Amino acid sequence: MIENNLVLEDLQCKGLFIYQGKDGYRFTSDAVALANYLTVKNNGVLVDLCSGSGVIGILANAKNRISQVWLVELQSNLAQMSQKSIEYNKLLNFKVVNQKLQEIHKDIGVAIADTVVCNPPYFTKDNKLKLNSELAIARTEIAVTLEEIIEEASKLLKQGGKLFLSHKESRLCDIICDCRKYGIEPKEVKILKSTKGENEVLIKAIKGGKVGFKIT
Image 1 (cartoon, rainbow, N blue to C red):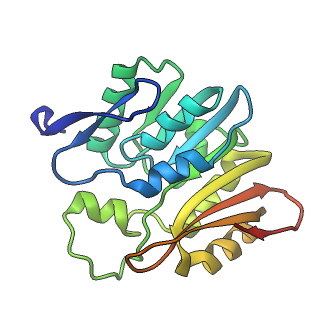
Image 2 (tube, rainbow, N blue to C red):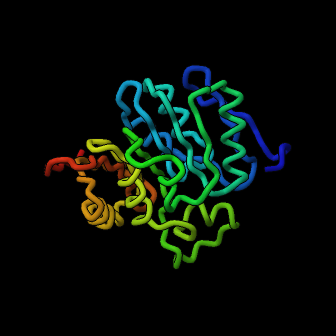
């Protein structure tokens, strides 16, 4: 990450700031909505997959009492950027892991997380979006698929642990099927109405949870 391409921005939450690139990847409103939606039990462990700038983990940490936050990000420039934000805000309970998501449980630990959260790539790799490489990896399933994310979340979560996802409503069936395939029971979907095209959804699922589902 080129230092002069970074800008420090106010998160307007408990005096926190975050570094973002002037060009390329920048977090959007769905990441903030997901951070506000998720919950972590007191002194629990949070793993943020596809963490990008780290905004979800940083905001979630401000709103919950969390003992450890893991940020897992494949792209080294984004991982470095989130590390700078962590250091700027003096967040001592954070760890950035700059590795591919698949089998990250071998480095972090099996059944370590009380909550796993992911704001994943929304588009399949055959999508015709014209993006630079940084945005393409962040927004399309080039480096990781939805099923791989859910499979890894199942390995990271403790029994009874919670998974929180954001996605497009057109992928809701895929999410429900993949969650059940890997033992994470979908419990709730929250629809975020959009005035510009397809709605987005926030999903809550529980590892080993009982059957029961609601839409809000």
